[in-house]
Length: 162
Image (cartoon, rainbow, N blue to C red; front, side):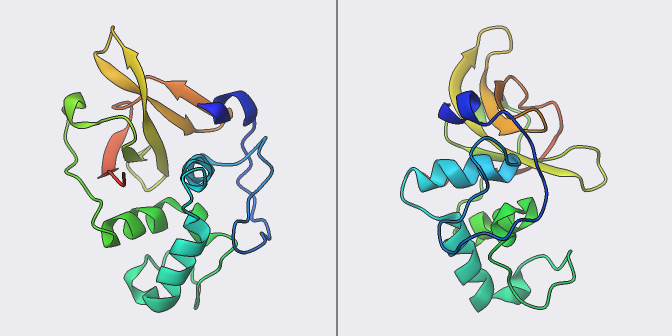
């Protein structure tokens, strides 16, 4: 929730990051940066974790970007890589249309347009009486927001890490 007060922008540019614990400026970022920052607050550096797993198991990860080796500046900021890492950690849950299956802290991935434009966010502990479901914390272009958006797009991934 803290990010909803700080991260007011969206910037998908490739950035050279320090490693480990690299980050873009807190005032900006993309959807994956919401997860990266939240995980860092629990002591887990997704940049490091994903980079090390990709270095050891590069062929297990999507090859969508034509890379020949892991890139610690960007790999953790790509939704398909996060999905692969969560699945490799045994954290996948079934994708359902039942909002009761999505609990606070769960991670949800979406295909926004049915053509591979992907998005990712957290299920929050904010409850909507109107829709009878928890809100999502995500950054889809206007900074980090808490909104009732769980089923606004096609859900393609559901993960519970904690």
